[in-house]
Image (cartoon, rainbow, N blue to C red; front, side, top):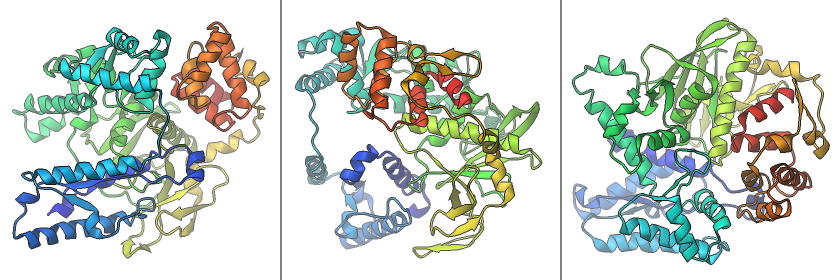
Length: 542
């Protein structure tokens, strides 16, 4: 029954969609098309039933089924394999030559990757730091120790921050959070720490609930107290672990010492809502919902927008919220499907203003999370009103998504699979109707003069001054200054005067040296460096 098992099929597709959702810079793609290298490994071949020929036939059937499903995805359907047999590399647990075969394949793929010039001391530092952690059997290293190791590797003291930023955000070999007070004193060298911690929280949660009935367990609503984390033995203390889990959008705070973790909830059987104007869909270019995004979005809605979890039963793939808008309480049901998320407003008579505010909150949350993950923003739409056939599969009416542009000019929605067009009804447009009220607002020219005297609703302010000491991140994101060379040069030139450095970075960006010069790109970067109040003030004006 492997075809119906989440861990075999859906997990593969979700993982691949997460990879497909994280392409490199678009300019680089145009010059040199990007192709991800993936190795699918089938383990435990020795435990398959039958003769060797029968085992090979089973593996081939699995590969054919996976290949067929992948071809249903618009992004993943272009697969470069010489034969179906090459799709899955099978190994036996008792044959060391199989492991060597996997290693050889991975080494071959790595050798084909485009090389990148990285300062040699940085690579030496990464290697020595890992060896140090392994030899001491630790999973995090204090920042002071990192600085000592860096000095031995020939890295200057004022360069260590840039090196750690590169190894975290570009190379992806360690985790360092300089802007989180509970974690800025250390470097995490083992990513498995996060997964182990989450697994232990889940195990501890259900072990402590072993005496409860299924009904009572559901009524715990995925909540736990901070004291429960003392039972989770890892190298992080309670405050460090909570800070890490909150930053990764794994848990959210419900009250003093009380936390909510959607992963602790049971899973529900779900069906798409009846076709009506009270729901819209969230989709992704890859055709599948990236792993973990539903739980992350749920925690962000609670933390950033004050949405309250309903007291009724909750599930890890279906969350019901209460939210006050226009002095009235509304119920919103957020449901996860493999290829899209559904956002349904239970109150059918809600005004257009309420629908617009709900979509706005959902959009802000997903854009923030997608920005953190460096993946494309989400798509929005509704259930397709037609029955469509694509690549041999039939998608029933109102059971599959159709995307559209969420703005006041949108008139049609396009079936995600067949590109078949359908007209938007007036009720659909209510989700973005408030855009009409913005049409006569003043348009601000994007130049340095405007940025240094930005005319906000309640005050005029200097954006360069408001950004404060965040100039290192500003340079990294806005100028694509991965190594921080430009920022360091400006830091020396302006003698660490934050306002002057920020002004120079903004000026260089406006000259076309970095991201596209648009208000949207600038505000998105300001959000990425966590200056949320500044970003909101600018958004409200624009």
